[in-house]
Length: 247
Image (cartoon, rainbow, N blue to C red; front, side, top):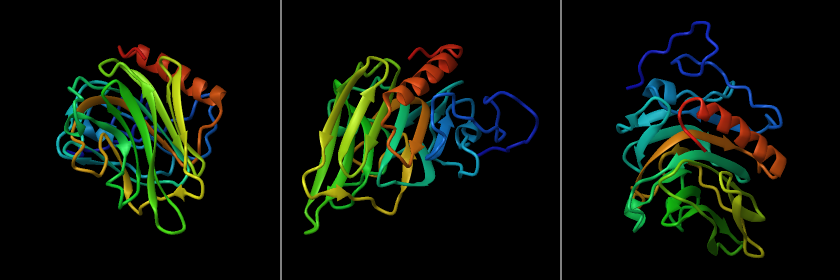
């Protein structure tokens, strides 16, 4: 499934080689743990385009299209080698035609949340909303799942950005301009398990929805600047418009 990677000169990301991605103007390169431009072939989708950062591994059999992967959470997805940060950002260009009626039909775009006793964080779509969830804990080992929501049209492409730290969890639908946020409970801090992040899946087998994902980004810092989020959105909007994906 991994294929063969060949190193030859090229300016295109649509190859199986390790062409690295330089973050666009207006986007701070600090804290980028991974950027995956998905599609074409699993060997291409696996490649982490951030210099010096590890590639992902294919799990199951995600269906390949030219510029995106069709995933089924917990079954067909990519396993990164990136540990969950305490403070971080997830970014995903995604859509889902699943029914979304329950967790079995809700896809996770980026995450490793397993359950309230295991910690973690998930960016996922459920019903008319997409959610950024992050587990927290206090000094007495009491646990709470902080969740932020934003309205979405599930079946259409959009760029979702979710952020989390010891203060708050936030989510942005960059395509519509809508956002949502929630603060962690007083006295609570983020609780991060020592597990790697997944693209197209979380770590909880109750979430097994299907969907398509074209781009995934993981940062070990909060993308707190509206200007920076907009710069990333504008770059990806132009990049994917040339490839038939409108966000």
